[in-house]
Amino acid sequence: MSQDSSNVDPLGDANLPLQYDRMLVVLHWVLALGIFYQLGLGLWMEDIPKDPPGIRAGWFNLHKSIGICLGFLVLWRLGWRVTHSVPAPPIGNTDFQNKLSQWAHRALYVCMVVLPVSGFMGSSFSQYPVKFFGFPLPKLWEPSPEGKELFSEIHEITAFVMMIIIILHMSAAVWHQWVKRDGLLRRMGWSR
Ligand code: HEM
Ligand code: HEM
Image (cartoon, rainbow, N blue to C red; front, side, top):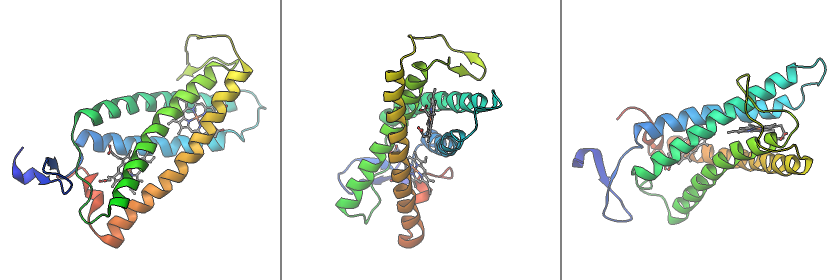
């Protein structure tokens, strides 16, 4: 890699890219949009009345179908992330800030895995088959109210924790961009 497209990691001497790889950039923003949609839809759909029948089920199936697609995108992103190098922590950050952002990013990845898995597991224990954009997926096991309850609880708590971390994450991005003015957003941008 030429010196122009790399910088020196302030924590070591490895040459690291200045920005996130474009594939990671696309996956970051597609997943961010998808997750915002899912969080909103998930909270909203629970208040849809069961009568007349069909409307509630339709929105639930849309939530499940999009959630399954996002689950696969997360796997792709994780695979790409571990096989490609990413920029060093922003210059001027304290060790505490670096640790906090590292743990927040890890926690976001954990939530991105746990949400689709717990959603799918909870649904597969319910009495309704999971319909992927209208196509019923095979039944994996017998319905179990305990299994459904356990995974629904995990799904709900994880969604709540994720919302808090996303607020912190966005606040940090806004602070870097408009208070510290170190151009952090460009690291997650398309232009090189
Ligand atoms: C559902 C919403 C979001 C999720 C789950 C999410 C998740 C993540 C994760 C996991 C990383 C670390 C990337 C890696 O090391 O592989 C990251 C980086 C980043 N995110 Fe987000 N993000 C979200 C929304 C946003 C939003 C709305 C903004 C802007 C306001 C933003 C700005 C950034 C920036 C600038 C970075 C790079 C940080 C750095 O260079 O150290 N993210 N995001
Ligand atoms: C990134 C992916 C996902 C996000 C962000 C997400 C988010 C949410 C949120 C915020 C709720 C409302 C709070 C709650 O009661 O849990 C919810 C409910 C629900 N989600 Fe998801 N979800 C995702 C993926 C999935 C998947 C893949 C499925 C099933 C295949 C699913 C099935 C459900 C169901 C059935 C509910 C209704 C409450 C319950 O029975 O647990 N979700 N989701």
